[in-house]
Image (cartoon, rainbow, N blue to C red; front, side, top):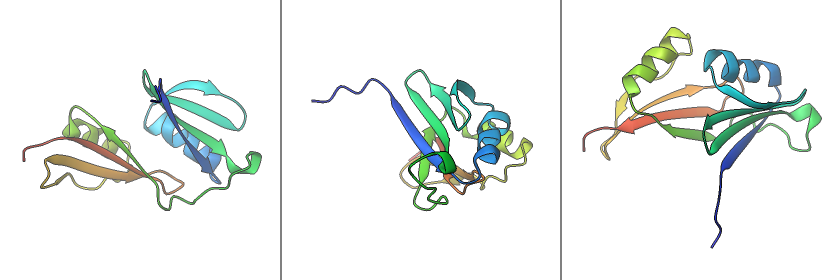
Length: 121
């Protein structure tokens, strides 16, 4: 068995500075580590999201295709209101039949961020 202590998703970006600013300023995520081509944001105690400059890395940007980062939150209405206030154009809240309340927003690179909270089934 593999005992995973933490997770980190790395997004390789062609719009590196714009994407870093999105996560740092618009979403107000805490910076855990920062270098001149790589910024690691803390999502919670054991989960991190990093933004890497593709021009300084060995992996290119996927231009947001095929990537969804999903995050469970306590209050989807509060998150939606925050994203609207930041002018990030989130989707309306969707009540899925499997019981989740979901919204989406795209980062500057085109990666889809999905926020969800439990709803009623």
